[in-house]
Length: 262
Image (cartoon, rainbow, N blue to C red; front, side):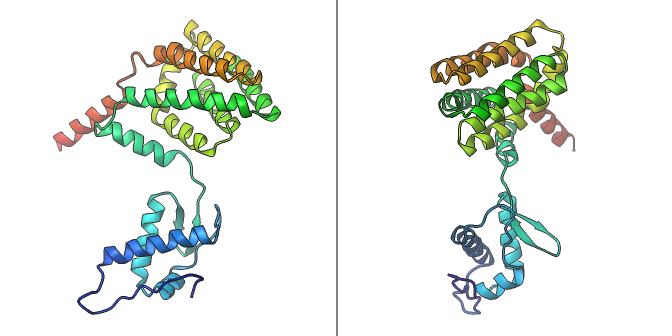
């Protein structure tokens, strides 16, 4: 029996728990096991057979619990192999945000406001906590951005690196996950906007704002960094999104039209 395991009985009495109850209790056990064993990305979970024996439940119950955990991004399953702990990224959070827009629970303006407030707080921490390596990386990225100013795809990729580098400089891994999530929501629309403006002076304004952020972070000045990031969103991003604010909303409408036509 696994250390700390509590057997879940599948009895034939009237008090027999429902299958969903067994699945939920199996999920709780696995999550507790991960915490108690201090498992990290790449670590393997016990086999379905072992978990079935320890918990006193059927393998289909264990498998359903595993699938539920895989759906949350905690583990990864593969046929014939033991499940492993995965390294989380922003994909799932991004899907949740996009779905919220898709079903009308939020709109793109709400998402932009949230990202703006997130990054303003993040850059202040980056200015306070940045290391010499962080500064070197940020300066290198912003120089590369200047050279790629008229290449939409390249500039867009560097822009992601820039914001992720700020997140890492802030010293909080949750910022990295959230920056990845917000980026995925808007990436297609942002790239299209950059490509259409590849020879537009507006991009030079965006570049100057990126450089101002790096200067403030390098100087270790949270107030200046906060102002530079605020300017970045208020002056630069607003221009990109003026005619694209309905990007995800239009996708929602297209989905609805497709459903109505079926």
